[in-house]
Length: 214
Figure 1 (tube, rainbow, N blue to C red):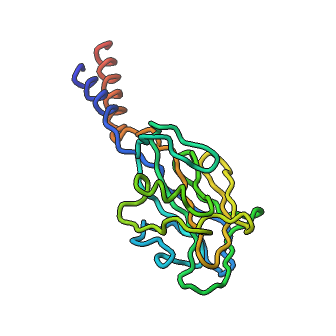
Figure 2: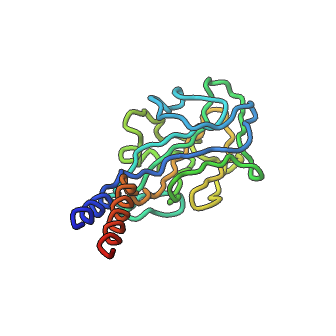
């Protein structure tokens, strides 16, 4: 019985690494008729790299413990926070100076994550995102760097709004260059990888207790 009890505790201790992945995207088609999509991290997400006629999103580094406060729009995420990173962008597949709109305030593109949203980096020049590429960017991805109008422009209908703890509504208008924003989410608390073993162990304990009582 003691061995079964220890096995149950061992099962509880086992845990899988957690991450706050992009889990779904929904909303209207872009003005070019394309749906938003979740993709694998591309090799090149720069202005001459990955492109599409609708918004794209991908997961970047996961489970990062911040060694210093991280600057995001309107504030900071505290040092010591464990975070996951994600990028959402809209970048034409060519250099044609034809505007594409995807999402409006009345009908945004809705991106849902498995972890709570802690902050967004959307400044016009992309300086916040560029400064954090070294700790949050996908290891195999080349990024556009900082330059004018590669984030959100106040004169255009570029916006985001936090619709719930883990859902972000986004709208973008691009021609050249595209728009890139980074979303930082909290890494979820790890869940037991073998929780079924715990329940099995506890069930066995109950069975033995009943036998002993009999």
